[in-house]
Figure 1: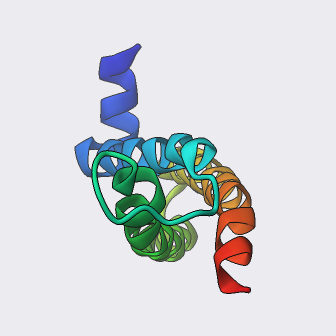
Figure 2: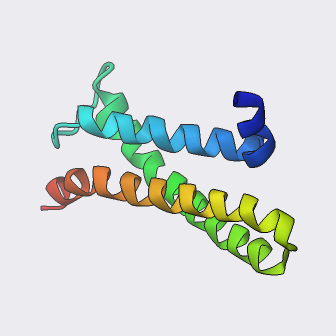
Length: 107
Protein backbone atom coordinates (compact mmCIF):
# COMPACT_ATOMS: atom_id res chain seq x y z
CA UNK A 1 0.00 0.00 0.00
CA UNK A 2 2.73 2.49 0.92
CA UNK A 3 4.81 1.56 -2.11
CA UNK A 4 1.75 2.07 -4.32
CA UNK A 5 1.16 5.45 -2.71
CA UNK A 6 4.78 6.43 -3.27
CA UNK A 7 4.51 5.41 -6.91
CA UNK A 8 1.27 7.33 -7.39
CA UNK A 9 2.23 10.51 -5.56
CA UNK A 10 6.02 10.44 -5.55
CA UNK A 11 8.34 11.17 -2.66
CA UNK A 12 8.23 14.97 -2.92
CA UNK A 13 4.44 15.08 -2.90
CA UNK A 14 4.38 12.68 0.05
CA UNK A 15 6.76 15.02 1.90
CA UNK A 16 4.55 18.01 1.01
CA UNK A 17 1.40 16.24 2.16
CA UNK A 18 3.11 15.10 5.35
CA UNK A 19 4.29 18.64 6.08
CA UNK A 20 0.78 19.96 5.53
CA UNK A 21 -0.66 17.31 7.86
CA UNK A 22 1.89 18.08 10.57
CA UNK A 23 1.13 21.78 10.23
CA UNK A 24 -2.59 21.04 10.51
CA UNK A 25 -1.93 19.02 13.65
CA UNK A 26 0.00 21.86 15.25
CA UNK A 27 -2.93 24.22 14.67
CA UNK A 28 -4.79 22.53 17.53
CA UNK A 29 -1.99 23.43 19.97
CA UNK A 30 -1.90 27.14 19.18
CA UNK A 31 -3.95 29.09 21.68
CA UNK A 32 -3.80 32.49 19.99
CA UNK A 33 -1.19 33.83 22.43
CA UNK A 34 2.28 33.99 20.87
CA UNK A 35 5.08 32.57 23.03
CA UNK A 36 8.61 33.89 22.53
CA UNK A 37 10.54 31.35 24.64
CA UNK A 38 10.72 27.59 25.00
CA UNK A 39 8.79 24.84 23.27
CA UNK A 40 5.51 26.82 23.11
CA UNK A 41 7.22 28.81 20.32
CA UNK A 42 6.80 25.86 17.94
CA UNK A 43 2.98 25.86 17.65
CA UNK A 44 2.54 29.60 18.22
CA UNK A 45 5.42 31.17 16.28
CA UNK A 46 7.44 28.79 14.10
CA UNK A 47 4.72 26.62 12.52
CA UNK A 48 2.37 29.59 11.86
CA UNK A 49 5.25 31.28 10.00
CA UNK A 50 5.79 28.18 7.85
CA UNK A 51 2.12 27.40 7.23
CA UNK A 52 1.52 30.06 4.52
CA UNK A 53 4.59 28.78 2.68
CA UNK A 54 3.28 25.21 2.81
CA UNK A 55 -0.16 26.40 1.69
CA UNK A 56 1.19 28.24 -1.34
CA UNK A 57 3.49 25.36 -2.32
CA UNK A 58 0.45 23.09 -2.10
CA UNK A 59 -1.56 25.52 -4.25
CA UNK A 60 1.28 25.70 -6.79
CA UNK A 61 1.38 21.90 -6.99
CA UNK A 62 -2.39 21.86 -7.54
CA UNK A 63 -1.92 24.29 -10.43
CA UNK A 64 0.92 22.26 -11.97
CA UNK A 65 -0.98 18.99 -11.52
CA UNK A 66 -4.03 20.46 -13.23
CA UNK A 67 -1.86 21.49 -16.18
CA UNK A 68 -0.38 18.00 -16.39
CA UNK A 69 -3.89 16.51 -16.00
CA UNK A 70 -5.14 18.50 -18.98
CA UNK A 71 -2.15 17.51 -21.10
CA UNK A 72 -1.97 13.79 -20.24
CA UNK A 73 -3.41 10.68 -21.81
CA UNK A 74 -6.22 8.70 -20.20
CA UNK A 75 -3.93 6.37 -18.25
CA UNK A 76 -2.24 9.25 -16.40
CA UNK A 77 -5.45 11.23 -15.89
CA UNK A 78 -6.65 9.04 -13.04
CA UNK A 79 -3.32 9.53 -11.25
CA UNK A 80 -3.50 13.32 -11.55
CA UNK A 81 -7.18 13.34 -10.60
CA UNK A 82 -6.34 11.55 -7.34
CA UNK A 83 -3.47 13.94 -6.70
CA UNK A 84 -5.65 16.99 -7.40
CA UNK A 85 -8.50 15.89 -5.16
CA UNK A 86 -6.16 14.96 -2.31
CA UNK A 87 -4.23 18.22 -2.45
CA UNK A 88 -7.32 20.42 -2.77
CA UNK A 89 -8.97 18.75 0.23
CA UNK A 90 -5.76 19.04 2.26
CA UNK A 91 -5.34 22.72 1.31
CA UNK A 92 -8.91 23.44 2.48
CA UNK A 93 -8.29 21.57 5.76
CA UNK A 94 -4.98 23.41 6.28
CA UNK A 95 -6.56 26.80 5.61
CA UNK A 96 -9.57 26.10 7.80
CA UNK A 97 -7.54 24.79 10.71
CA UNK A 98 -5.25 27.84 10.89
CA UNK A 99 -7.83 30.53 10.07
CA UNK A 100 -9.01 31.04 13.69
CA UNK A 101 -5.42 31.46 14.88
CA UNK A 102 -4.55 34.05 12.26
CA UNK A 103 -7.79 35.93 12.89
CA UNK A 104 -7.10 35.98 16.64
CA UNK A 105 -3.60 37.45 16.32
CA UNK A 106 -4.70 40.00 13.74
CA UNK A 107 -6.86 41.97 16.14
